[in-house]
Image: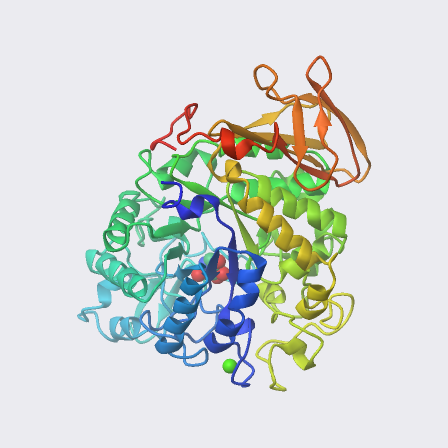
Length: 566
Ligand code: NOJ
Ligand code: CA
């Protein structure tokens, strides 16, 4: 069973084909190029790729404005190239999940063209219309400051249409059974071409009621079960990873009480509190966030991430907390976005400080869930704040010191390559870091390998172990008669902490360090005393290295709301 639920103990890597590797020299990354880099990804040790939208699109929202759900944008290759890519992944034991962007289409999609052409069009009801400007047109924008409203008038239709995002992304009427059937068809199509599931875009909006008369949208959670059910009829172990930045109270609505809805969700709640913890050296609100997001079915999993292709949304922190994160990680207005977030990449946010980067990565790999790495973060890539909005953190992958970082042979790359300053490709690139045993890349590879060897994190039950020092976070996982324990010091100064592993008998006496030689032996009162350097981290196995012999076939202590035997 643990091997069927592959996403529970996995390492995801998110990338965009257009900025990864250009094989045909036209300046745009393509599937052929990506295929040639799969050996790199296999070496890094990631087990699944989350591929961002690659379907035909005008590209006004980096592909999140799709004009044909059943194709590959010709700039990236053909459907044939796509299948070569999924096949290449399969041969290397790497799974692929792709974006499923069905809250809206591009306004150039034939469905929308049809729909706007006449009120009698069979596609009219695929979108959300109003005769007059709805009273709430000025509310609910996702990109405040850039997006002016959620309703726009379409001249041709002589009517207003609803768009939760930019005005070129008309919302699909997802309550329409025909639209729902089409969504299933799209999933079925890509499953057939070798993907293992989907990262579903904007899930709360997909399932919300939409319309001019809808004052407070209501989530139709049953839709989630229908999506999942269909997917699993087609392929049993395929998954949906939901993009849903929601409050912990509603998490279970998305997972389903019986684990019958989304297999995975991104943990936005923990993400924000994690950045607050890194900025303030205070782990208390992070610990609270971990507890708040703890309830989930045993078969479900969190996607744990640091940065992604969007802004770091801090909208759920208090104003005081948000200000602390802004001050530390994005003090200039130009680094902030939509009045609620930071648009920088991870390395510049953390001042390029290797200790802090390792700390952040170590946390991402050891908090409850499956880590999701953003391409380029494994080498500490930077951003280009001269680019608008979120594009600053979407520059091409830096492979080498060759021209254009080895990304393309063209002199006109689709997006400028970072070539100046400490993050310029001459300094930060894969080829250089491959040769350096102490590089960020090689460190990341090692930490990924270790993460995969500690399934306790993905599968186990966890508890935060109290210390008197808010700068130190200690978490213990228990699973199948084994335990692992992780210590993180969020502060730049060294700390001394005492704690008990909290296990019965002598079980917690010995902590074996997984990353270095300094193990810890508890004193006669079962207390471990530890001096940990500034921004330090420790990965321990509780007990000796005979843990594999001790591992039981079932988890006899699985408590809580386990919906399936783990
Ligand atoms: C969420 C995606 O992550 C973001 O990049 C996109 O702009 C919106 N959904 C709209 O599709
Ligand atoms: Ca190309």
